[in-house]
Length: 369
Ligand code: SF4
Image 1 (cartoon, rainbow, N blue to C red):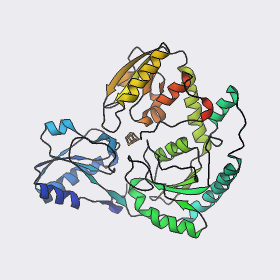
Image 2 (cartoon, rainbow, N blue to C red):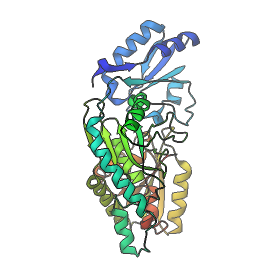
Image 3 (cartoon, protein in one colour):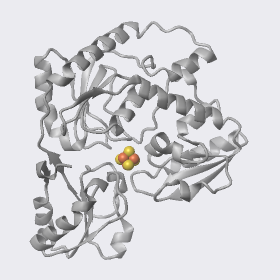
Image 4 (cartoon, rainbow, N blue to C red):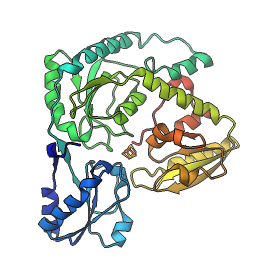
């Protein structure tokens, strides 16, 4: 990571600590910044006079705010870096520290990809109303077809999104793309998202039928995979760190869908299920877990609710159940299921396996609203 070009905005935090006369502060940083955390602790302590405790457990999102254990240690304020506020209350005063990256990639590299995707979106718009009745086999094929997903488009606009370090680029990019003839929308999401154009690995609520394809400003394929699984729409990616342009290939997404298909088929005969409940404040879906337990009972299966802070194979594989349903971070089932010795599926996938939901409705991403 090119730290010189990142802006870690610690000044506001120091001002808040001084204004509140806080004596003990917890600092929570994303995994990629753990190496820099001790230096940040030094400067916060020197400038504010407060003592700082690093919350050293893994942290992958604002869903994972440290809470009661820090209060028990006497912490008065949590400083959470690199993620934005979401619609949860951890019970602790929390200061969110924005991190922005100053690199601006060239648009030219991604334009040919965007033009191809616009053509694809326009053709899908035309054929949106031309759907035939489906039998079970055709419905399963539809499930596996990332391009032909059921997505009732009303437009073919370009949706412009990004990860949080690059959101400040979106307005400028929108104008530049409009100059190239694209009709652009920066999607506004629900309460879990703090900023226009923001996406999380578990929330793409800004998607709308008027958007036919996407451009993502950011690095890695974590957000792109979720966005394409959620929307079934073509996605171009422009990496602000390297300037590289690429696209999320449908082959890649179809491979994931094929894996999900296999897991749904694998739990067909399963009798007992572990229902995972995440203890992190922004992942805790207790009501969903209880609904799943009732659903299993309705189908003469057993469900055992297991609450965990971190979900990992060594913490659950040994339970004598046939499969697991995950209600914690949705990406555990999507991205990590190969690491588990038993099928690990999402609530929607369980519904399909039990015949409570239909294949032909297209793959439904497990979103936390
Ligand atoms: S629930 Fe998962 S995907 Fe969503 S913010 Fe938390 S770690 Fe990220």
